Image (cartoon, rainbow, N blue to C red; front, side, top):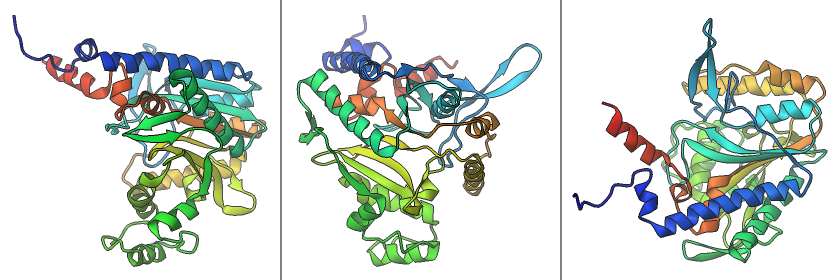
Length: 356
């Protein structure tokens, strides 16, 4: 009988690691507690499709696709990157406040914080704006920490983070000024932004577009500082980064969009929903042009979604929260593979062993 150490296959990695089993069981309790939190507040749970002929069109997301057939014709369908379109159609149809808790897919993303298949919690409130969803996020997260760990204070890589609401709120412009040293409100052109970034000490800047340079500066200088020693709500993104979000009435250059960060980890993405079908179509067409500029395929516009907006879509706000990341933080882990039953590296290893 072989005495070699077992490889981290789909079941041996769990069988040989008691700490991993505890983290996975905590995941079970977290999913239960999330559902109870929403049920207690009158939300209904929706079971949206995993496969559909439509998909989110964000320029930097790569959807997985497949083919389905009824024996007479073949239909191109996509593994959903988010249940957003489906839930919004149901809101237009008259459904009450609702949430979905399930799997979504994004190709090309594998890291301690990314898996091509992951669990997303998404919810919508009628008559609310993005500030209500900020409160939801802080309240839900703190309650989960207390219910699962007995305290709103969690340990992340040897440091304590206090999840007790309220969480600090800071605008994107303020964050870029504070940590990257760049005033994005005045540097509106590609050339001005590159000059401001170089002046702030980023000598590597060459010919980046405004969008690419923003993300490089943000990931390098801003994101690592967010969420210590308490979570941070980052809000009011430039409207170019809020394709489905409503413009802020007092400042139409920014969108009523926010993200929450805990210990440098992006937890969620929420916003006051754009309800104007004409502006929404223009924004989707802009995303198509951005995809083309990146060399990505143009994706089909979901005309049914635009019809839902035109048919009486209500004022509302929605948020999408990464469940695996939240459970990872609550469990004291540093890799979502430690709170995922079958993470991608293990699945890939299995496929490689069996491909012949």
